[in-house]
Length: 301
Image (cartoon, rainbow, N blue to C red):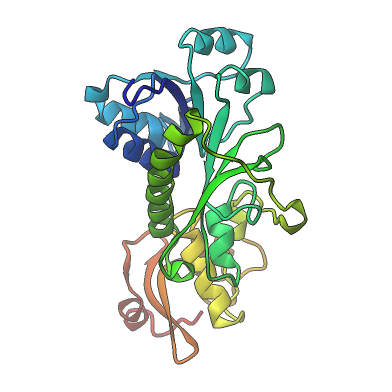
C-alpha cells in the first residue's frame, strides 16, 4: 500500500497490464491483483498466463499478491475481504463481478473503460471505434453497478491524437496509459469525496460485440477505407486475410483449391485507393506485398 489507499486490482488483458503499470509507477500499488486463470492457446493448446499475470511475474519487486479464481464465489469473497480494501479498480477483467463482492470496499469499485461512454460499451470498444467512422475517443472511469459499462461517470479524458488512424495495439497502449494517468488523478479525490458523479446518457449508448476469427475474412471489393479500418482494428488478432484466386465464401474454408490464405498486416490509403503494404502468406514469414506479388505473378487476389 502506498499513497494511503488499500485497493484490489482486477484485470486480464494488455490494456489492464499497462494501466496497472502506470498505477504502480505513480505509487498506487495494489494489495492484490485478481486475474483470470491460465488458458490453453496455440496449436499445442498449452496453458498461457494472462498479460496481467505476466506483468506481475516480471515485476516481482512490487511484491504484489496474485489470485486467479475460476469463480467469484463465496470462497473468493471471504478471501478478498481479508485484505479490507478501500477500493476496487477494474480494467479489462473479462468477468462480471457479483454485486455482493463489489460492495466489499468502503469506496466501491471503479472501472476504467477505453471509450468515451456511453459509446462503445461491451467487449470490443477499441476495435469497434476503429471500425466506425468516428474520429474521437478516450477513456472513461465509472462507478461500477450491476449492468455492463452502465455506471455513473466519475471522470473521462479524450485522447489527443488522430486515434481513428491508429492500429489496435498502438491505440490500446495510448488509451491504457491515458486511463492509468486519469486514475492516478481520480483515486485520491474519490476517496476524499471530492468527486460528484454524472449519470450516463443511456439514450446515446452504443454496444460492441465480441470479436471472433469469423470477422477476419476481407472482401477486397469493399470500399478502401472500410478494408483499411478492418485491418487496423483486427491486427494482430484475429488478423485479416483474403484468398488468392476466387476466394471461398466462408472463412472456415482454408484453401479448397481456391488459393492460399494471405494475412494482411499493413495497409495505407493512397489517392483514395487501398495500398496493401505488408502481408504474411500462409506458411511463410511476413514480407512486403510487392515482394510477394513479384514471386506470384500468375496469381491474383
